[in-house]
Length: 299
Image (cartoon, rainbow, N blue to C red; front, side, top):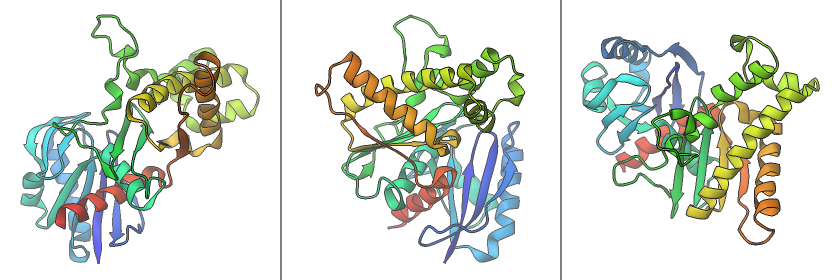
């Protein structure tokens, strides 16, 4: 039994077949339409047509506040043309199959909870380090949705006390990778368009102290928020995902800076230090979790 798994991102849409056990086949990629709902539905219809004769249904991960039981989207995050609409009803008119939709951060968390590094964990947190900070919260072995399906929207945590609409003081900006890359490019006198995760770690490996300092500062500000989340939610484990999490240096620096926050500034033994691990599935976790959401909704 196969399903069509689709992870709709703010830049790219990844998709492919996934079987009942969460095993993925070939993953293909398209640019996510940014201009209109019509273009978006055209893309989704084209993807469906490619697999229609092979699948039992569609499992979808996407940005925004999504009511995963009904498919209602309060908004689509960076997809500005999606607001106050039922995504399942709209998609089923073009793609006549069973469809279930989940927020991308919660889908990634579900993937780790089902088959990954949150399996068997009763209380956990997953943070996805991307353009902003996505993720999810696990309470009593289930992903926390919240009263308005917006639990785990970590990007909007404020990092200062100023009365300002300036988004630069939001957690999603301070620890979004775009801000990190911009800082490294500026410090190292490099064009911003040349900077990405591979270039950053290449510079650090080559001994570039400015790039290393920028990444360490990034991990320190992240560690402060991990302390806050640990204090509020008391998880057993915190999972870090996102493109740059694939390099072991990132997790190493996060752990070192978490220790610094706990031991040097707050006193050793006063608070519980979280267990920190990288995600098992990386970018594929959204599709795996979208299927798990599909299965949960069909039970």
